[in-house]
Length: 210
Image (cartoon, rainbow, N blue to C red; front, side, top):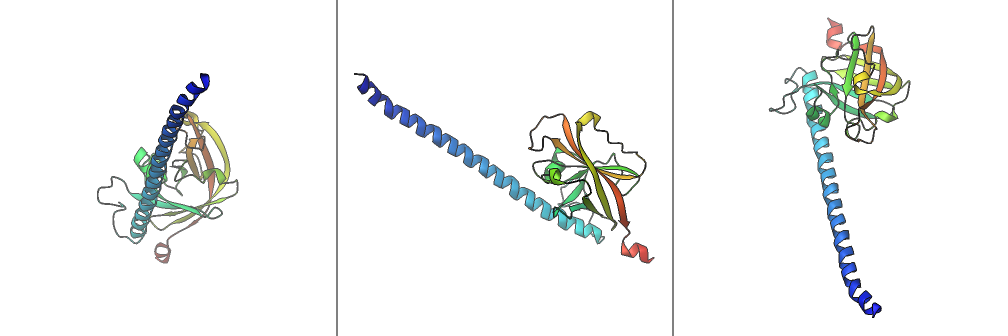
């Protein structure tokens, strides 16, 4: 008797399992699709940002990557050892951080007196930040033609409202910051900070020739 009941239950259990697997597969496809879309969007945005930065260095355009953009590109950041690079956008917001590293406008430009702050998302534009080591070179090209080299002096984890960054500090410094933990978990009050000091600055050739 019980065996007959078990026989009747098996098809239902199988159908339930199949439905669950199908749901999980569909959810996976949606997530993969969203991931590919986000990746493609990021790559296209970087190409447009890079083109806009090159034009600005040449004295062409106003630094906006597309006509309706409400921000400008201001620099290009790269890490020679890690072979990573990105275009830095003026102003930190959800929009700019989703497109590329963003310069905090309340801080000085890289190379000026004080501590310049550049922020980005740890799961996209700053996915490499956790691989930076003390002593690594961080290279920054500005839209005015200056080329800067900073040396990483250390990394730390701090609360967003007690991060120890002094934008008016003596000397010329750089702070790269992103969310902690580095897996992109939202809502954390902590930040991962890479501190760096300026070690070299090269003026644009046209300016030095005057």
